[in-house]
Length: 189
Image (cartoon, rainbow, N blue to C red; front, side, top):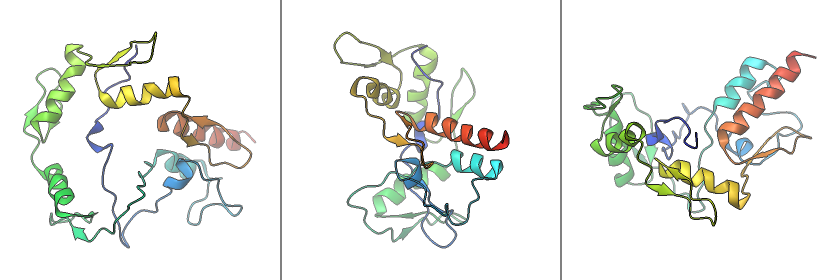
């Protein structure tokens, strides 16, 4: 099927935690920077478990105008920081009760708009169409259309960080699967 399985894309553009308690950010290695000769400090990629954990990490979207994050989430136990009050208030919804429940599968959402978007998966409605000549494929989610368009543009922004491996991928999930092949190769040596 043209449509990949529905993933909860609420968190696709999520704010990252900044501070001493933050997990290390290895995004740069998931989007094109090669590993340094001594490896990444704090992670042993020759250990298959650590390599698999590295592969599961989500790359952080880096913006040119990355303003400092000085606004803290007031929710107890949350250490996320934001650039402005607007971003913090938007994030606060994630702590709210998930009262919008899909009648088809039971998946629950904080916001009604997220439930409506999710329900497209069940209705089969595909409002997002590829406009490249001769294609016309349709998708339920705009995120999936944006990823699909890379087939036409040839854009492969996700580069394997391992030295000597120059494979590039259009989707971060494909890069992560590929990184695991390095773990399997090390296991078989």
